Amino acid sequence: MRSKKQMSGQVPMQPQTRVRARFGAVLTASMSVLSVEAVIGTIALIVWGQTQESPGLSYNALGIIFLIVIAPFMAVAGAVLGALLSAGVVMPLLVVAGWLGRRFSGREAWWWVPALAAAGTAPLALAVSVLVEAGPLTGLGGWLAVTAALAVPALVARRLLLPDRPRLSGGVMFGRVALYGTLAVVTAGTLGVIGLYAGIGYEPPRLSTERVAGTWSDGEGGTLILTADGKATATRVKTFDLDDSFEPVVHECTGTGTWGYDPGAGSWSQEVDVSLDNCPMNAWEVFGSPEHPKLFVYIGDPDSWDLYILQRRD
Image (tube, rainbow, N blue to C red):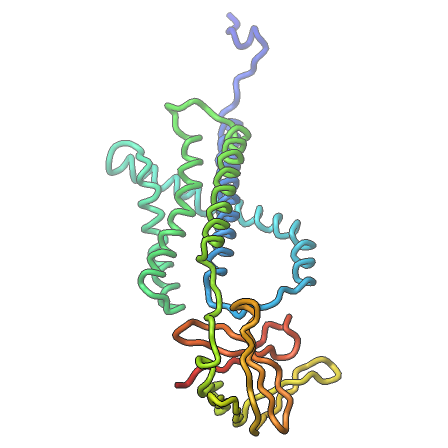
């Protein structure tokens, strides 16, 4: 006697086909979540970078064009990396977490996933913290971030493996991740913009003529003494020119002259002009912190990101 599925023309899915479909759905879900995490992580990294002490280096237009050109290749590389992480880390994490749940509690439980992720990433986080000499709080934050980055895609993919939940295809799960992931990205970006607008971003310390006066040193024997009456004395302070091939040429300047402080229109436009009798010197710009202000000039092309820095010695 023919079954109803046979009579209706529906062919039951073979076991191997079901396994491949489930594998593809889990892989799609994991890769989608990892992509969302990568975007949110990039936003967080940019916001964090804006809070760090920086001399306000000028942007390189060619660098931006280069990033635009290589963006498709970066997307492909990100997809490959996401697939490797999903197949090599997230899926084994799900398998081991499921086995541990059945072995020790008689059933699978979701909390085995973050617990196993935390245990597995702890040695790596500790090794990296020791290698880069990070503080305890920094190391703890990095460990929790990596744990969450692995646990979240694993928990989302785990939803596809639960027998007591309605079966979802990889396409449906991808659509859900894309929707909620877009909301998460927009929320993260909005909070970052609000935070920077509220003043969490870095700004150079606001100086004055009185605060600029003093002894500044490059830490290598070069000193610049600026007195309150406007006189300047330089000892082995480096100055920089460009040769015919646009490479910086270093000179050591020793001499006397005058100086002046220009407050500019804001903290980013402050300048200290030093005029010496026997060597030209570019205007010094300001960064650092209120407790430890710094003066700097660019070495050669500003787009090279090379700086010559003087710090308050007194």
